[in-house]
Length: 189
Image (cartoon, rainbow, N blue to C red):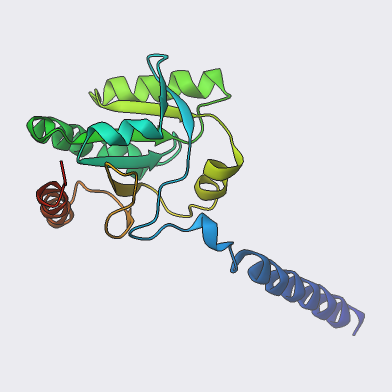
């Protein structure tokens, strides 16, 4: 009888913990979620060549494809050749392909690992290590699926839905290219 009571008590405590955790994580603050038309959070970063980069990078391109990844994400790594191909295909349209690697800013070893991954995958598009700050951290720390891809116009606003999952799928890539062409066509410059 005592064993049954102990198991029941443990199960009850586990259930209470689960419910409380769900309640804590299911209501993320609104400012951590971006939707179409919202401005991408302000950030300061360093590209993997040591150059400073911030939100001003968006101004020079009708659209920027911003990919968010981390070194432990196999899907992120697998999609890199497709992103490189998109970068090359859209260079003449002045489309910027850029990535934020989440786990590289303060860890030299991880940055070296990321550089090896990029080299092995033949990546030449810009990769960033973002400096921690309240605004960008609030967004990046609440991402729950990777890779994450956003289209950002020259005003720094997110255009269309945030895409989760790899763009190396033929249909996803075709949809992405169509959206990019629409953004370019509507560019005021």
